[in-house]
Length: 185
Image (cartoon, rainbow, N blue to C red):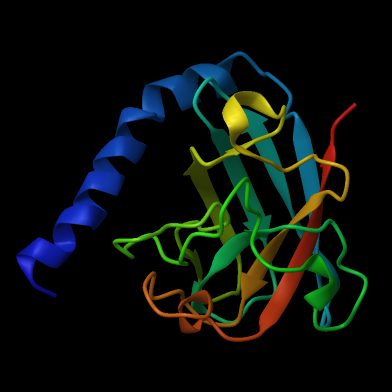
């Protein structure tokens, strides 16, 4: 990869690092998440959880999953809270709050609201990751895509990594895990 192509990745990394003090403060206070999701896979059934907490500018997603093949996997927000079919297609396409944007965190005309960074499964198939998105909300604030709208939303994990550019879905392959996002009461 050339240096100019690494610049967007470096910028996203610096932004993520800048949120660490706020994240640490949030977790030290023991605040409960505003939404949660339980991942399911065809192979295992229950496979893990995601907890979502909203801050002033976006949503932090803490993902803990097991049973994935080792390596990188795409994870996206999908527009319907339905993981009832075997291929998880009922979860629809990516969430959107307005006009559809091209897919991809590195796409010059993107990203769309459902795009997230890839997650990595260790050799034992487990993922423990914390992600952040400034393009979604749990409260309907600021015109961002509302994950808790009338038809809900889901987190979907794909069989391979997202290249963050190509259509569709960055070449990430089939949907292998799905979790309906629900408000925590």
